[in-house]
Length: 502
Image 1: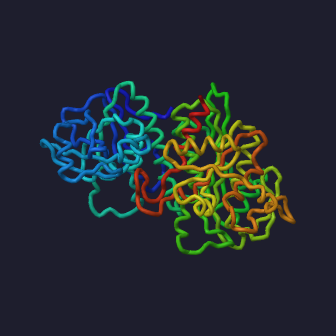
Image 2 (image 1 turned 90 degrees about the vertical axis):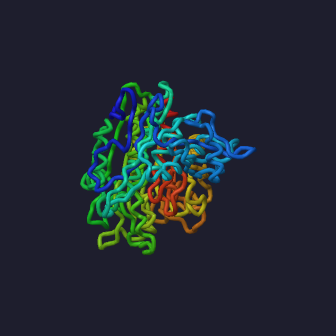
Image 3 (image 1 turned 30 degrees about the vertical axis):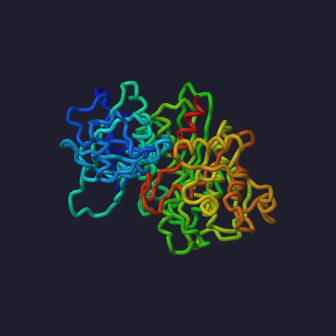
């Protein structure tokens, strides 16, 4: 198991533990688990809420005498996400709002802690108690405190992230450690997605994934374009053939001796997507560095599973390619043969994610897993149907519903979606077994799901998670969600794996 924390009086974490050959990494707050507040706790971080009679704060708040009145004096209301500072008895006290006291639940606390973490500029040291839940407090602080400045030139010294003591009972130490692993895995995914495509291309990305694997206790295999051609990975080769940077297929495995249930994970890894010959518009094309977000989420999830020693047999398959236009690129109208023999007419080269996923799903299904989860920034139609924050979940009805519910439970909104009978006819091609787009824009996310379903082995419980919107936040930060890469749906997948192992 990859070392997580320093055991002893306290457990401490400030950033993901992986030493990776990336040009830049994100930063977050430094957390330390303690069983009692220090005599000098620094700034005190206090949850407040809106009650029937006004502002409310817990009676266990550090130095609570007179604090309620002090916060009310400066206008604190307890609204969700509100952060209020006061000087009280010679100490800085910072209130963070949880909203209506009757509506408080885990993700509200997580979102409030995320807003708090972003509001700690200039604070060097602080202490927080966990009466509203240790796990959401820890995850919210680590996720909300994340900043990524990339390779931006720093002309002056940057402030260090604040150090925060998290006070809890000794029996809660394991819960703290687990929350840290889950948050770190999400931050790892964010770092990968935020890395520009001139740095992160199939070969270099495969190398970085190998570094994560080696530091997480995972086995790793990387297959080059020669192997892909020999074994018939026609979808992955078709997408990658237009680029000077050839595709790769990465296989990660976690096979604990006690595992009785097997799970396959598949993630789309398009390191940049121009659309190929079906070229995208120039506006916002720069956001396509995020088109490998599905694969990054799978890397984060399986590394978390290994570090948490989840007793499942897990195999992850990551198809990596760069979708570029060139004289060697796949043309609209070409017919390709996927791994396993299904032929497909490629009518739109910008519907490339399903082509690489199909190969990887077919290969994963060859091992007859009990469950298969794939995730991808797959379709703009996901955002048309469900907006920018809610993933579309398709697949085997019972498992699909379960994964969507788990996502909502951890704060990564997901909604179960059907695979439509009327798309069956549209999937047919006059010159191949199937085709990669339909005649209509209607239900585009669902058509993509139906396409993928053709490559899932019969009897396998399958869930496909389309995170085209949720994986990338082009707007302002909110709750514990930063601008740019969000890390979705790492926490959904980790929680699903945890439930499957019970």
